[in-house]
Image 1 (cartoon, helix red, strand yellow):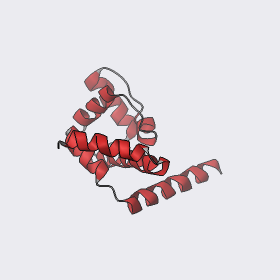
Image 2 (tube, helix red, strand yellow):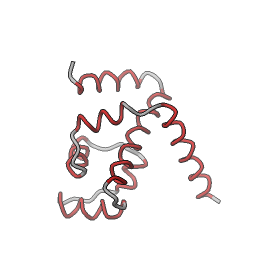
Image 3 (cartoon, rainbow, N blue to C red):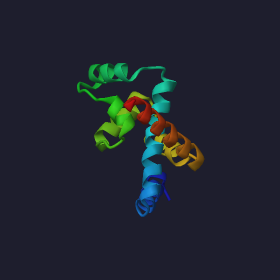
Image 4 (cartoon, rainbow, N blue to C red):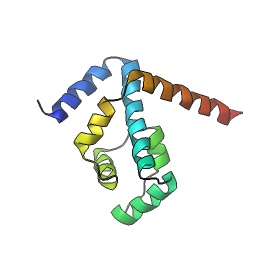
Length: 116
């Protein structure tokens, strides 16, 4: 069975449980942040380079925080970070629940601190 089919099956399995869906979306967010950090580039510079390279703007801060984007944007993101869709998918599926839980807790702390 191909990775894409397994990814789709995994996705639909996650959709059954809201908490699992949150974990899946958070895994995407984590991978996006990792890729940007590996490239050692700010969100603002990703935005600028995207416009230069692809001729349209993105708000990478929003994409990282709320990874809900069109498939076309996903293909451009993979191209920009020079990663295959398959490798991106593997990274998502390899996230451990304890790491996702920690990431969500840290995100909530940052959110609460920003309101003070």
